[in-house]
Amino acid sequence: MIKVALYEDNDSLRESLSNVLHNSEEFVLTGAFEDANQILKNCAINAPDVILMDVDMPGISGIEASALVTKAFPKTNILILTVFEDQEKLFNALQSGASGYLLKKSKIIEIIEAIHDIYNGGSPMTPAIARKVLDFFTRPQNQPNPEEKLSERELDILKCLVAGDSYKMIASNCFISMGTVRSHINNIYKKLHVNSKSEAVVKALKERLV
Image 1 (cartoon, rainbow, N blue to C red):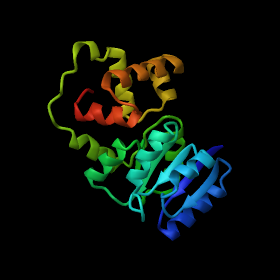
Image 2 (cartoon, one colour):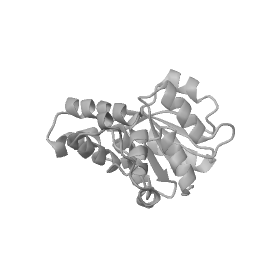
Image 3 (tube, rainbow, N blue to C red):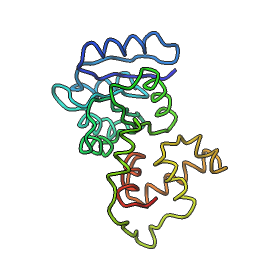
C-alpha cells in the first residue's frame, strides 16, 4: 500500500480527498494538513511515499515545503495539486523537487492514477501543463563540455524521463534491466549536475538536450 500525505488548506477539498484515500485499499493516508509548517516533523514521523501538495497555503508555500522535503527526504515523491497554471509557479515547483503537477480540476481517478504513476517513477502532469513546459523552452541548445556529453543511450533514457515514463517503462522500452536504468540515470544526474529527476527534466528541456 502507498502511504500518502495531503497538504491542502481548502477544507472541502481536503475532506473530499481524505475520504477517497482513507476508504481506498490501495493507500494509507498518513495525514491531512491545512498547512505545511510542520511538514519535516510530519515526514519524519509518518514517512509518506507520496505527498499531495497545494501551492498557496498559510505559512510556508507548497513550493517552499517541497524544497525542504526534497532536501531532507529525497525518496519522498511530491505531486503538486493546485489551481495555478502560470509558468512561473510550474517551473518553481519542478525546480523545488516536485515530480508531478496536476490541476485541482482534475478528476479523482486522474489524481489516483497520478499517485500510482509518481510512486512508480513517473512524472504525471495535466496535459495543458505539459504543453506549457514544452512551449516555454525555446532557447538554443547549450552544448555540454565533451567529458559531460550524454551518450546515445543516456539521451534515450533522458527522453523517457521527459515523457514522464516510470523506471519500469524505461526498462521495457529500452530492453534493459531496472538496475541498468538506475545506473544510467545516476550518470545523467552527474553529467547534468542535478540531484533529482525533476531537475534533470527541467534542465533537459531548458537546454534543449532532447
